Length: 376
Ligand SMILES: Cc1ncc(COP(=O)(O)O)c(C=O)c1O
Image (cartoon, rainbow, N blue to C red):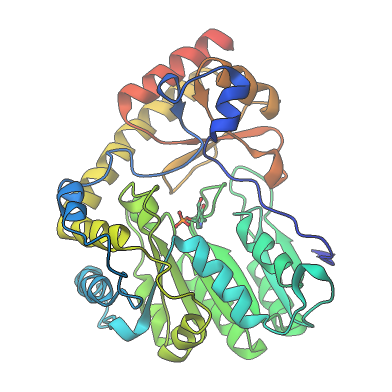
């Protein structure tokens, strides 16, 4: 466990490729395959463009995303095996789930002077290595951040008894756990999350369960049952689920008081009209997620087999990305980028021996493997 005082804004490192990176490499967007962001490999569902064409661009979008919340409530209630249903009042839609992460830290660390100095007096516990935005958002609010590192590869599991003790003794306001975890792909079971949620209840914390990649898990347990607790918020990303990366749509589910608290910090109209219409059309494609999962499974099987043949260890991943132990990650990232294959160097996660490969279609993965075989 490490304690850090955040006195400087530290912007997180992300996957994805920016035009400035491409220019530096002398590449055009059409020259590259981006394996550094992990999104559905089958592209956006049919019907999205048609739905967006009907949007009145001269009108303000619904600041409450009401129609989308109603459609999400129906979609989620159909998916759950438990008696739990989800109501629109238990939902908040955001401009990507990243916006919701920032709403959480603003709502739960509200008295800060922010990055200009001072601390809120509040703290957060983050189970690491993980998505950098949690730390970034906490830092902007001046919150003190503690981290608990996962155990060694290949399983990268946390000592959850220790996590529970830390939550109860340090009483953080927010506890972040990503499941399945980015970048390790490890997936905690219901009993594990229950343990964290119970400790959070006793310690007065809100447990933030980030399920950005849950739609790609083959046999997930029914996490909606967690909504019976009033101290758990579940984050989801339609960006990942439906390849709506450029539109930016995410949502969270929680007890109504938590949702109202977060909504109070959200700027009106932050989810634009095109995003709301596109997301509604995506939800109408009822077998899309199963098709996407099956393409992930096909490509993943191929990648694991061929990466193992190259003698690169690949820890098991429940998600739509693989962590691959290549040795010198920055050097592999650079040499693959020069060939138009963009992968995520995991140095910023504290894993400088690993790259992360977001799973794309089988033909794209075959091209990546060809290049890796030539460079190995
Ligand atoms: C674990 C995790 N949560 C949330 C996000 C944010 O996704 P978005 O803001 O596109 O919904 C990401 C993006 O990489 C992620 O890896």
